[in-house]
Length: 266
Image 1 (cartoon, rainbow, N blue to C red):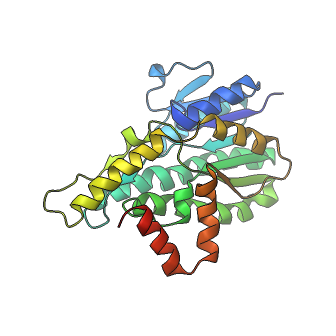
Image 2 (image 1 turned 180 degrees about the vertical axis):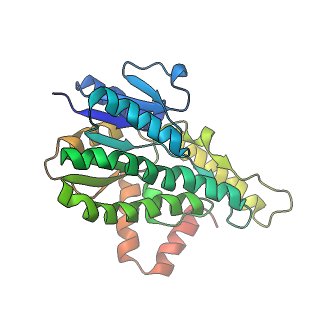
Image 3 (image 1 turned 180 degrees about the horizontal axis):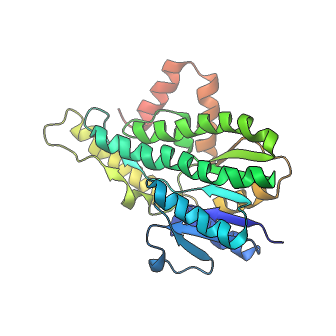
């Protein structure tokens, strides 16, 4: 029987690419979007807002009601946020964590009972290479993804005895529409960070538009699903993005910070 795959945030970008690729490999794919009627894909779509618990309960219940189980949960829904820490509204920081962190946990909580009953299951959390380091003007995004990396490590140990495996996949910059959906803290006229933030905002958007093909992520996810013994952490992206994580491990803090500051022209 085909495995049942549930993908949050499958209306565009990485999530859509994963859905299309797995559908082409004969998996039973259910993608989610807040407005599924507006999404034109060959796999099934259900309505889901990861910040609303009732929406999560309804979507998971719908799929389990049809299929009897969910074999693979791919937590892909996420939201970008940029801005100097001092200038970014705390309410926007909290909303970002509601989507990137707490929303993921609430989806996992709703799926786990079914997976425990089946004594099998795979949960894949899409994090970010940005979650391995605090990036200037992306600190809140880095923090939300870094928090998810650590929770995944803990969860992996907690559910292993039930036959459930949990992994992180950290992408680098991919050519998606994430920049359009980000919350951008305005470049305030009286901000102490006005010039540097404005320069970096343009730099960050250019990184996304010139990023890797999202199908690279889809193929990586497919290999993880096929693996009999998946790792806990995966990184998918360009060489320098992945190498930057190694550099952080081996370089003294101040030297690594200087490299980042030079890159961001700070």
